[in-house]
Amino acid sequence: MTAAMQDRQISVYEQLDRQRILPGSDIRAHEFLFRWHDIPCCACGELVAVTGKAKSGKTYLNSILMAAALRLQTESLLGLQRMRPDPLRVLWIDTEQSEDSTLEILRDRIGGMTGAKPDSEQLFVYNLRQVNWQERQPLIEAAILRHMPDLVIFDGIRDIVGDINDYQEAQNVICRLLSIASFSHACIVCVLHQNKAVEDKTLRGALGTELQNKSFETYECAKSIDSHIFTITQIATRKYDMRFKPQFTISSEGLPVPCSNVADTAPSVSLPVNKERFNPDYIGSDGKIDKAKLFASLLNDHCLTWNELRAQIMHVANVRSPHFAEKLITEAKEAGMLDTIIDKDALRKYTWRSKTTLFDEAP
Image (cartoon, rainbow, N blue to C red; front, side, top):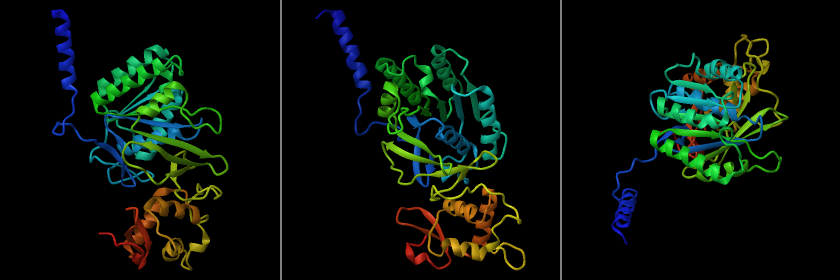
């Protein structure tokens, strides 16, 4: 072996030593951006895949993630709550929709869910639909390195490859995104459609195979055509399993409204909230809402989470506004009508008065 060959071999060994993992290695533990009903999700420095058929709610899920990143930490969306006390820095790359659609979602949907105009110093939005596909990946990488966001929403990853079935191209793209995620410590959410056949729910092409293999978590969005209810299912994870499937429908304002455990055959929950249309069964003789009767009917035989209770109020009492439903829950709690319990799955739930014997009492 020549001296030059020996030098190259030593260089390879040195590089190998730098990558070695030992029990005492000083390695940063996994950090998660959100809790979903107390289940950690969206790991920093990793890829997350969002998939589904066309028009199945993928962009709504992305909007929910972005809104949750910017809302108050004590607030939640579909049970999704930010872990950090301060709002997250979010980068949204849109390669699919028109600029007008991107702006509408930014201003009306995300703004509507946060209750405020999205802060330009916390949310960075780029529409690359008109950019040639070969130029998109360098721009996306530059945006990540420029803003160093906590959360990246990349909708959609198919638009940075020429051939979705090219395995070499797919491997190069995914490896590059993993490297950038590790360097920036950002959670990169990649959107990719499922195959078009109704029965085929695999992610499209070689790119989908590679994304599924390398993602830390994968979420599937589906829509019930009859009831217009969207369901989110975690179909893969490397760490924490989600045993629930968040559901939502769309209000007349175009915003996602939680409707956990509402059957697909249930009528729309997007009904106006006013005295004329509030379910008269829960209006007392004094013309005011009879909260005792309402909550007793909902919780006499059930224990419901906050989101489930809010959804049932909206469905049963013909309430359109989730904020009004939340106000009713708060008033019932303050009046001593509700008890809080922790169920066998470690979920915090509400029950009617003295039914805490069903489970261990909350601390």
